[in-house]
Image (cartoon, rainbow over all chains, first blue to last red; front, side, top):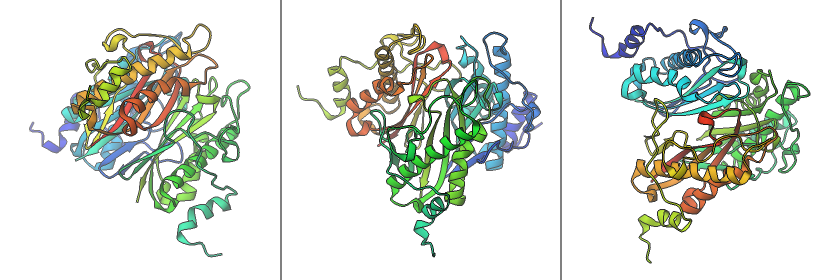
Length: 163
Length: 163
Length: 163
């Protein structure tokens, strides 16, 4: 199969067994994404089950007594990053128009004593790096929050430059 | 009464029973706002009583045992957003010069088990949407922090594009 | 001693008894800094001992029972800010090319009842103001997180405009 250049990011997703769903709606009186000049900002992306708004794949804390494992946290970060990619596709039509992922802000709901934010958030970073190549390279923030919206273990926010 | 176009945002505020105070000062060695190119960034805005620096309208956690209610949280978010509007007016002279509110970062000091960040932060979002119309549309982040500066239940940060 | 204009920021550092180390590497699959147009974003900067990646000068919470003091928190913020300056120097070659520090995001791992984020983060703000003068003026966010990556008491993120 020859991949056309404009399907390359989604072909890479398919090879990872992942598909882009529709861009999930917001959970309040704000926009899921906004483009200002050549920069797109997304609001917080949740790890929806099968990428469909309404049911989170996981809830609760990562780490601590009775909390989710690092592997489950990684899966949440990947799912939330997938929703972010769906927002970016909705914003620009085709992911090949993304020149650079500038920033990923990663919000974790962490249990007492958990400090391995980096491994969890690599679930998002690995996806962007794999799917977008050099354009997926990004800076990152890692926050261990006390309480997240909707009890979500992970939220991912993305800032991207459009070509 | 005919509203001149440049008083429209403040006329809308007046109809909501709200007025803009002076832009509150910073609480440390930083600037309350900064303009870089056509983008204005504000530092954290607190829910000052009557918009006057020094006395917070509320302190403490939102939700949890003995915490503030969602309605009180909503009021805090509205007050902090009002301070953000005062900063923007200070920065550009007239709120009609705001082309787009790009981003609202909403920091909440939340009690155990509280996850309704969205309803609280709609106190800020509703204000921007109401006062600035389409220019008030924005992306948003929602953080449930463990401890905020000054024990404030809500802080609001704004990034805005100037026309 | 006559200071050449391009060594001025580092001469000021030297007068404070501080030196810039190498720009520390990232702790996950992301970039320590990225330049997009004339804006540089850094990822989270830790208070490494002697500016060398691998050993934090401090770990744990600021404030609360058995926590670090405000003075220790201030020292952490200064160390993390020093790492941010090392990233900026790595990005642009010479700190005199920094036109404006736009934003400092300050993440604190705080103990129960601690709310003096401002004094702690002045450890970063004072450094930028002292070393870069008017170009060091910045907006700031202050977050009291539940759990930080690597149990670090402080992380500093910087956005800067390049001349």
